[in-house]
Image (cartoon, rainbow, N blue to C red):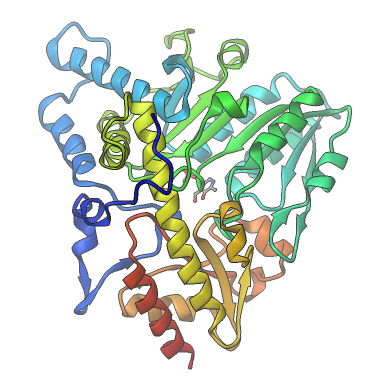
Length: 420
Ligand SMILES: Cc1ncc(COP(=O)(O)O)c(C=O)c1O
């Protein structure tokens, strides 16, 4: 049985004890990792799994000897772990170097099925990794269209999105959540809209994955892609593809590679040590779920329990961060600011402060041990659409479940001092 949010809370002491890097100091100040959207920290078990693989199992796949067989078993185990993470079958899980590379691979394969004049619908809210791979198909005569945003709260303009679906639309590519302003899109609604119009749905879940549970069966999306380094794992990408699409589409690959899914989508030798780290990272999340719900009957249920407590904790942090940010003179927040709408956003905040560039703020914060980002973080369409690209983009403060209320309080004091 699943616990509800009101019954359990995140065990923050246990969580922080899992991440050795959180103990670092910068010139005597505790390091505060508000850079999760660019890549989260990793638990010790992920580090040990990577080192342990290299120490004891390092081999290529499909060999008739011990370490190679162990490598095959380890990859199968990691695939099963990611299948629980996505709620799909293991043969629908494809490993790759990162989300961008996987998306270029899928866009080229999908492009083989398209004709000049066919349309692909993208959004201004998306990371460029879910834009440029589709725009590359313009050289084949594919027409790219963009759904607009509501500028006041940086949500998708769903009416505009629906209006821009035509009889020629073949695919909608959309983010689950914005890596710049934190908006969580109504992906289920978008997939439904796509399918009612006979259109494929490709979901970039990179920014959403550390913050909320993914269920590709309930979403019914055709493709969904993540980067494991954004949810406590090593630098790799993982794609879910519906079996029928993975079987039908023709990958660009070498002849010697199998034609069987999912391996026909995995080219060359994979990063086996990182795949060992991925299995450990899913186990970390499942263990977090078990601390909250000791009776979780299987890994999927434990993962859902983990996200229950992650969301509960992150929403409390987000509320405190929003209150603090909005109290700073001259600060403009881009995105949802209403504390009653925290279920529609991730705890990722994009701000600008009058009289200070984002780079200047990030540098001064960094000197005090607060790790934030400045710029566009490749959400280039959005910074251009909001006309902040020429002025250095935004300062981005990205929270993760290992952050604490005290860190938020200290951050707001530091920002106030810097901008005084
Ligand atoms: C929302 C989003 N999509 C895609 C990417 C690209 O991911 P990768 O670095 O794995 O290619 C990022 C990375 O920042 C991201 O935040």
